[in-house]
Image 1 (tube, helix red, strand yellow):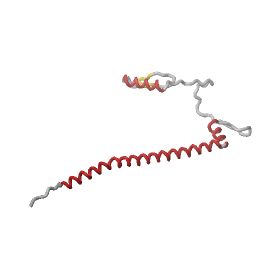
Image 2: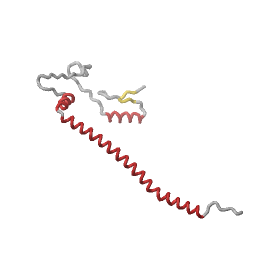
Image 3: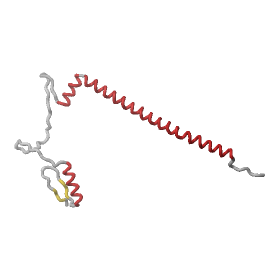
Image 4: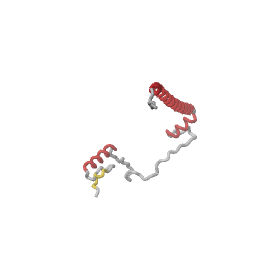
Length: 143
């Protein structure tokens, strides 16, 4: 008895045909998946645009309401209405920030970028200095 070979001519042709079919279907399947992903992204963008549109429409309706405009001018700009209406502005009741003589002197602070640069230079030099912000811009040595 002779043994038959495991790979016959028919099996080889079948394997080649199956590979050719798989390779010919790979590109269209990949394109199909990419298009489905793009469709999903576009639907999400459409939903976001519609929600933004409804928000803008609601804001437009609010701005057409005269009562809303009056409320906002009172709240944001502190406007008062006609004579029968009395408005009050509550000031900060904290400690006075200036000297007691009635003259308020503004404290000049260094700009943030100057303070940042000085602290970077101090760290680079390794001097251990701490930069103070405020009117007396002096360096103090930490011990």
